Length: 111
Image 1 (cartoon, helix red, strand yellow):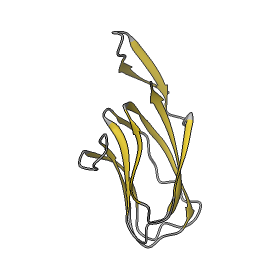
Image 2 (spheres, one colour):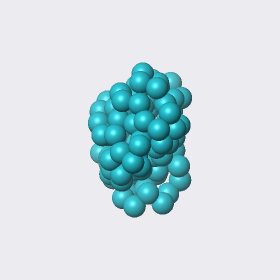
Image 3 (cartoon, rainbow, N blue to C red):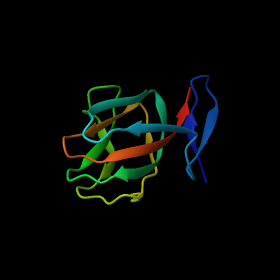
């Protein structure tokens, strides 16, 4: 399945939503983590260390105030992959509070 976003050059660029082409790690309780500035798609999140607090992902270039595009619930077990397949336009920021899980995040980004 491909999703079309307007390209900066005036055409369209496809992003596949069946997995990401870029992977980032987020440590447990990392606070605010800026993952990317620009457009893309949050494809997958894998919980690698359980936590006791929920984590949120925002469409925002850096201060975690934009639209929420993903959530990992509190007490998410290791191996959990919450259903995520959301576009972001401005950037992607994770807010992982004290007690939040460690995660591996997969994105497709448009450069």
